Image 1: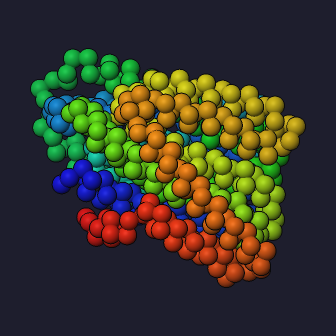
Image 2: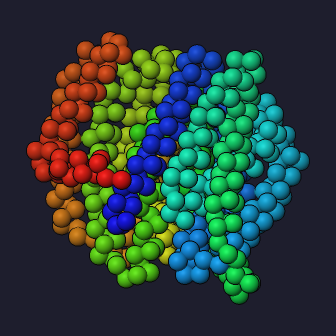
Length: 491
């Protein structure tokens, strides 16, 4: 199977699973926010999840991504090392997770008190189980990425999303409130992790005949390469979660609810870019190892152009319809999220580029450079949040995210260019055309938005924007209908 066909097949599987995951996430968001929890309880739930995401950094320590890098390398180079790599990675993870869980169990009440919210202690106590099951849930997805078997990654993700929706809603309906929703997350991730570990054992661990002994120094390299990945992942999670935690510390759970709703909507919009980045990144490592940098460049440039063609207009359209969208879909109680969502639409474009680029840099062997860039911008984001949240509230948190992420994206693009020698003039012409298409589409949506009074009219305005975009994208030559049909038909 050609590289292109393999990418298309993996992208389809990942996108379908990501769609299942994001639809289940969207349903969970709407059901909890609109029907089951008030803004205060909703904010309390996701504030606790934000704290647990930071704690989980210490349980993950970059081992999953490091293992995936060596899975990708040794499945071609020396398959007999794969069972040793799997065994060592799982053993290391169990040790680290046990230590982190133990300290969280001991100090959960003190952490809650130190953050100014003693009532969060039960959430953090439940977090002992949360970080364990979610750590293995994410590890399995990344491990299958390293093996370039993205259908398995996709399946684990989809199972986790659907199970989380079912159990979170069920536990809240049984009267357990926001804490019940957290236990729904735990059960969902536990089911996904169990499925993923079973596949990893039967399909990969038993599939390869183990070498007589573990390659000398490979275990050390596995841990060493996890260090820059730990720094990058830490900075990435801090970027995504520290603003939520600080909003809760400086403001209140209601503000957290507004801010979280805006971020969840952007996550939903970003699902295709995340799927594409997850799909193409392992190929860069393979192509660099075989000296096929021209093919790697072509893949990246095509992916970047297509992502920007979708996300620049999508972000503009979302910013325009954000008020009626939140009012009609989420509920009028969450209109405080509108301004934040409009600012984060800029972040959507930036994150789309990041989703295509960050994992690719890891597979190109530039994890250390990316870690430095991510660490610096994460610290800057933290500092800006400390200044802006107390002064201008949740809008300040959104501004800090956009400003610091702009710098990070610029550095990532520079590193990719240094590795692949991107054709900048061609990319600039494509981006210019996309901006023109966006302007025309935005004009049409702006004219129609004041007429939106119900969900049907909102859907009509979104369809108008999508239709305008599609016509212009095809007319400009950026979208080739014959190629689209061939991609859809390919397997």
